[in-house]
Image (cartoon, one colour):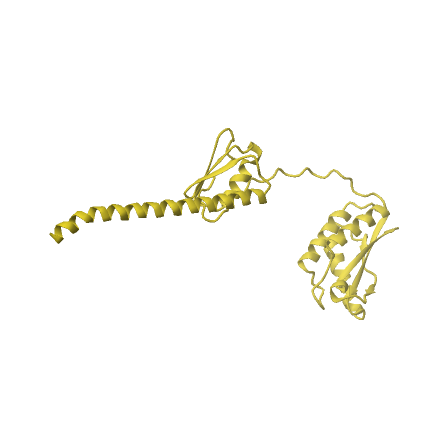
Length: 238
């Protein structure tokens, strides 16, 4: 009878469907693993890591044979690949210090802080030429600059002035330091002088002897506005 015939064919149809589904899943898994393996190879090459193997089971990576000094770098490179779910390392390679994330994203935990750099042991200058060279170096690194058309120091300008104050605090008594104000237009004598006075007072507040830093005149500047809004400092012998 027709009903009986169809009932006999139904199990066979189900088995065929399940088999086709399994083949499709297996094929897709192979495609994912092959793609991730290729991307892993490229990622390791980009960071210059070699000497190990990466294999995938689905989206889970397994690392073997990497040198101990390259293990952490290899794990980090694989974790950054989009689509990787977990990363495991095996063999004689020791795992890196700290937690290893398995979400495919780099760890949010900050790396350990480097050891503090040794304190510089270079001596302070002792003569006019030495002080002038150090002043020039500091001003080149952080010029003492002002906001446009004001005597207000910029944040960088204030930092530069404070660095100069640290240098001049222990200057010999036979040295003095002339502070020359500068304006972009080269025409505002009062603004240039007041800028020099601003720096003079800041130096005095931060330990520089009152009679060692002075501001007698202005300096004209024909440069761009950023170059003119500053002061210069010159070391002089008494």
